[in-house]
Length: 260
Image (tube, rainbow, N blue to C red):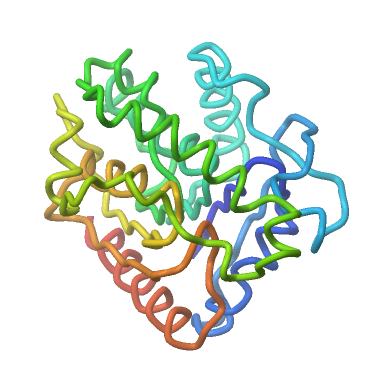
């Protein structure tokens, strides 16, 4: 069993290793985790420098179609050299990269194996720009929430918020869901097709980017997906209950990929 691990922007493979240590300890032995560093140097993600030393990396420098597509090409080359991978495990910007690579694969090279046979997306969503380029309809409400939630995340994850409020800093984005259910949020993006490998979607109801994580689950095959709300912020909580739940979902998705 081989797992490709894609970190969030402004962190690193070694930081991601630390972030998932609690649930990794509950997985069977013999699983190989490949913690990759993004190809670009980056400033630290908000609040990360309080806990982890540099270097920090990102998967691209600008949120443009060209940069994201270049990152997908970089990822495909890495997988061709170091794979194959049974699972892609991603956090935040890593989710954007992984979901974009899967969509590009499905649109352009569906006759070839995908970058990984199954995916676990943690606290991350798709790129609205990539979706629109590929023929998805992204509603104006989803676009507005995306912009507002990025600003809220920068404030709530920042060093001053961490020092002032600790874990209480996570308040989500009060207006982000407008009282909508997860199913209603999923309807805000109309999919001409869906990511069709087994997927797990982990997000927290206090994360300003919560809706983005739900949106990503909506463009994946509902018959092959599982979702889990860890009820925290833009993070991977290390409580025993959350770690056990994620370990169980990891087992489920690997069983599904083996059955493909």
